[in-house]
Image (cartoon, rainbow, N blue to C red):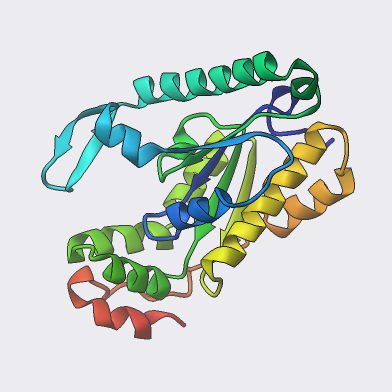
Length: 233
């Protein structure tokens, strides 16, 4: 039996993936799109940097997220969102669902109802990270994580509903369109509509459809970024 991702259709959705796959760019597009239910987006990296961290890792050049406090904050934001919807328009709030979208590579660790995992082939991911100005050791770390399906495996282990989207040959707008379709289909499913569509959507973007095992990365190093474009078979 297909079930909606969240209770009564009020959902927390994680948009996750290895750094560089395009999460924040996709969210920027989603902010300009219309949804059939209220949708808020939280940039996890921003709030971790400002409030919810336990210090700075100088070796890895990143803040150490305080996951317990971050999880509490996310749940509180979702409750406030639902409360405000009920207060502002009680009739509408009974018919519409409140969706909170979490943007960040840690979002799937916060017990979301649904995880949408963005993927990119190793050479494409390396290209994007080079363009972003990532240091060689960070490129190396992230490319290896992508090859090993680290985030996908974590999401499947923790989330009841997981989608996987290969963004390698897609522009940001097209990826945003797919994410928009997924969210709208989940909202419809929560309202007991679109059951056939949700089955098709979950099958089309089922986890495990992306496989980078053919990529020979035994000699790859982020210090030699140019080799990334010749390694994929």
